Image 1 (cartoon, rainbow, N blue to C red):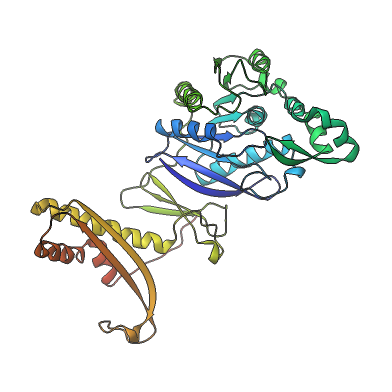
Image 2: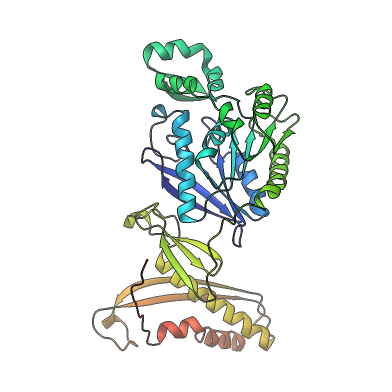
Length: 406
């Protein structure tokens, strides 16, 4: 499983912090996870469910809503409707940068949010709620004794899960004006409702109301004695396993959420729109992020172009040494290659043809593990200098560019 940090603009333009977990191969589908009220994308239940789906070939995007976790913005200015809008923006980002989500998963208030957002994401084939309220207004129970004070003052700081949050009157107004059970009745997607009968935060009667409002195909799974946040590992893993197995029935028939594979040896690089320099690198059926560090105005969401250049040389070096060692039956146990790139003045390079301006210099440290003689180590170093990428970099190179029509 690979996980990369991403950013995309939320409903108000604030940068939302996200994480995309993906399998090593082309994902069979993309899922979008919405966390609970005042939680974040990295709670254990979210990470375990993501891991279970990745194990089955799915990619999962989870993110912090505006004003929460590592995302920008003020929590006090958000509400349930803005959370739904952030979810739609997250789906838009996936659609543009990778492929649209076909599975929505929501925990607690996040479950209500995915039910509300599903109708605005046409590619969605299945929706899952975990410990979710049947209506968003249920959240008011967490600070019921302060409702009047919030309405009178217009804004008030309340303690939720041991942390202070500023709640505005507009937040309450939005909750009370929003209903989702009508949307559930017209969901037109497969629905899985997961809930614990001993949930002390969101009573299981909420699950009954969601389930009764929905039309088939729909399923209900009891989480037995789990708590609301699925804090016990076995509860989170059970929910993750059941969810992943259930989703396969409905996502296997969904339209493929994938970009066409490129040919062997073909690479495509395209901007993601999530940062000044953020790009998606596609090589065959593999996808990788590329970016610049924050010191250069980037978002540091992936390796830099020079990082990839060094990675290509390092990988070629290691693979070439392995092939040579296997052919010569050398006791080479492991290869580790570490590389750096720098610009130096040509006049400082004794063995360079150029004597003016600057040139690129790559330092490559090669660690060879195994019971090797000095002669064998010398032979391996000589072979490292003959790896195909090394030769390409040291030979004359021509890059021929042309413009193609959109």
